[in-house]
Length: 127
Image (tube, rainbow, N blue to C red; front, top):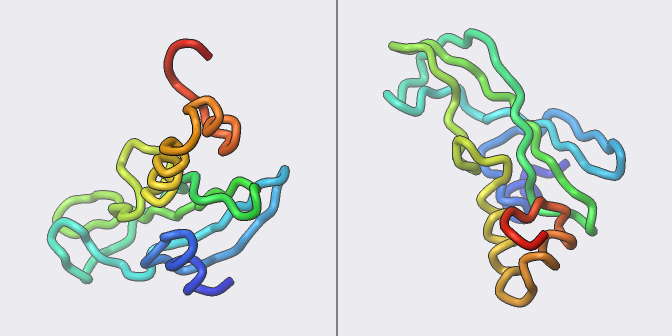
């Protein structure tokens, strides 16, 4: 898959595509950050000590849900810490581009309609 598609269409910049899977009607894009770099001290001289996978919801393609499954590497520089994601907040399960997409939909639809359209959970009263 083209890196240009990740960057321009899905807003996933700075990542290399590893593989793609289609499972249960959803598209899973497996990716890893392009550069090994400590985001706190900005050093490229890091030692990798393990990793974990994080699944983030991103923009749909043809009404199919798309998940970015990102390999987050644990680096040792001065301290041991995980890579920083630039495309999502630390505790969120969706990307910045998905957040902007939902906000745009909320300007023309009700929250319940946006929830049904995107397949995301609608928090709040009256559901």
